[in-house]
Image (cartoon, rainbow, N blue to C red; front, side, top):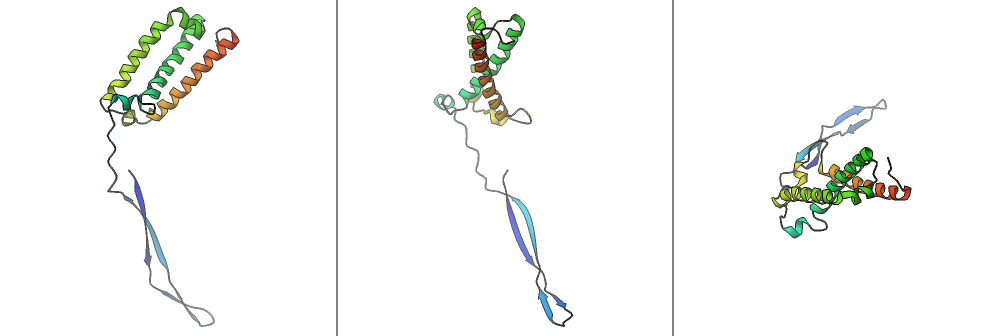
Length: 161
């Protein structure tokens, strides 16, 4: 909710003072008050488009959010499998990880797209610590972390952990 500030100046009566040299001075005071006032004419929020081309557009709500969610799950699961079995990321993928990745990707993509096609946005469900902006940043960091993990293991020639 946006608010505007209103400043009002209220004139106060004149004060007459006498100085030791017996000259009179008129002093005029003003009181300034600041009040906050809610805007009554705020524009209504724009309705979200549910068209397939709008939802999956390059700047649409789905691509970065879905890729971020997949990266968060991929990064955590890659580290968990690496800790439990000692396999690096490329070994995990080549030793049967592709079907699990595809199944997870399809399931998570469908689960992310259904609310978007119903017109529900992640921003409308954001509150407290779990905001949509935090999810986007966590997804971006997970994307970078997953790529950095794969490159580090490739250069090192073995699992990171």
